[in-house]
Image (tube, rainbow, N blue to C red; front, side):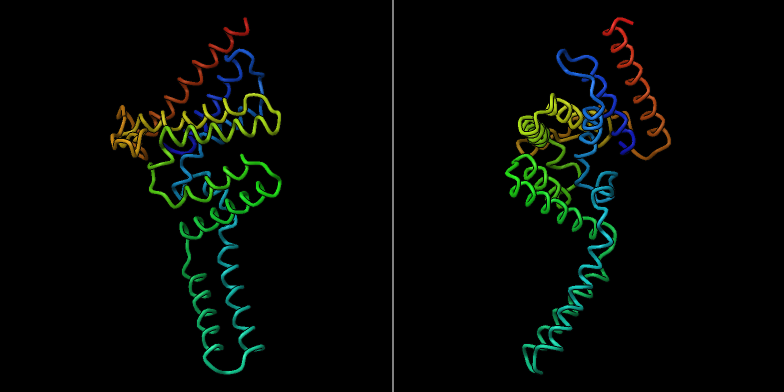
Length: 246
């Protein structure tokens, strides 16, 4: 399913949580969190909507390798005498430069997400916020896994919900775990409507659960996604209006 459809379903799920779950305040940040969480499983795909947003530094990754090459070359030229050690530094500088030039698209975005995730891990350790470090670990590792593998499992859903729970306890915000977990689960449920399905219990057993209605990217599939989002939205709207007594 397309990222835009996942986002719509996640946001509608957030509205459902806010409007129908007793004791849960109607919270725009909570609804936004559900939408964000609905995109998180596709961090395993470098061209997904969220990967592109979180990997905003991808162009700077290439510049970082170029800068590293220049620094190594300058150090070798200015500080080292001609000989084996200087040649080693020149070789390393050339290697850094070639990697920077050759890094395109998905590879650069994966490294950008890795650096973004590692930076978040460090921030979490520095501020003693475990949820932040776990979030950073997820962001750093997800791009290096196969698409629709471990990020599309019940275990990843539980981990994401636990991260929300820790954030809820640390920050004192209400229902963070509920919004996060429901948004994440909505992605897996939506992908279970596609022909590829979802291997919810990988690696315990490699079975793809699916109700193969949608062929992602096809004209018919796109129309079905729109119809599902619209139908789901109208259902939730009707339930919420009925719940508040309008």
